[in-house]
Length: 79
Image (cartoon, rainbow, N blue to C red; front, side, top):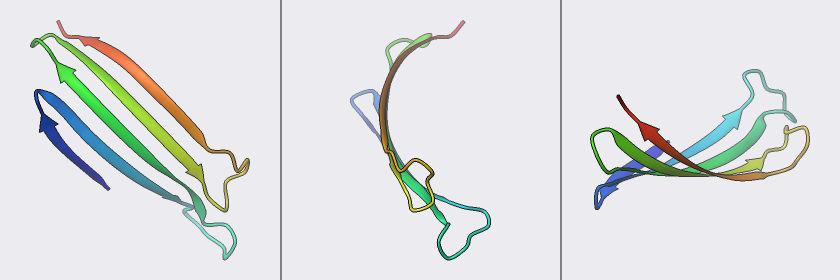
């Protein structure tokens, strides 16, 4: 599931993932959930920068039961 909008020349997007096993048993089905937040700004037709934040929470079937939070910053050049 996702939602997005544009605010002051910046694209904003929120994406929610609910990971499930392809084949489940009563105890192994929930692989975790993740929320991604993305902001992208194009300041020229050839240049853009972006920032992404991801927050993963393990489910009942996740092997390590460890959540992860990451942040990325990137730049793009189109030619």
